[in-house]
Image 1 (cartoon, rainbow, N blue to C red):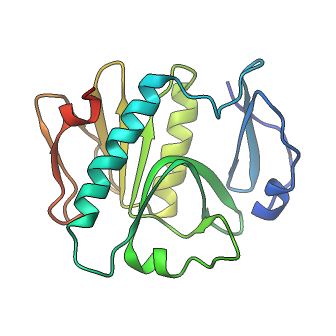
Image 2 (spheres, rainbow, N blue to C red):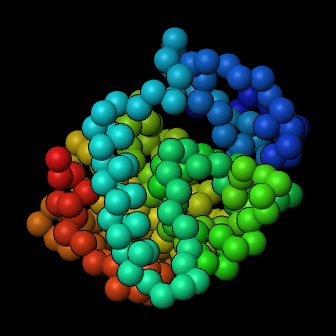
Length: 196
């Protein structure tokens, strides 16, 4: 279970200056340092099922993106660092993210972080995730204005789609997932996320 570990509001820069602590997953939620301990494991070690699904989603998004007319956005993965808002700062690592062409073009080479709201956020559930942590991230994404969020459940092989001011929608492996109007023309069977 996660808990706030600081009472003052941190900036993204203060967060990034923290020393590495193996076995601890950290993120900055509305200026509050959040962390979850994982014993002697670090969150950089993903199980192969999580990694396979992440790679497959990146492949599907990249295939769609390659078919779009320039200027194109960008698909990133592997806990991509994203500052979703400032004052208070919200900094998260995202499994898979799609940036619009406009946002991708405005990212300076002087930083390794994305600063702004991506078009699509994909969170792949892990056995260590708690419902409280997932709900907090979803609230953060929605409050920051992320227009499209996919929560991928490897166990049940489902994708839950969240959009601001809308009820979540659940898709299973017998259904097709679209991303209109945010990813025009993107259409894929949910089963493709979980294929070997």
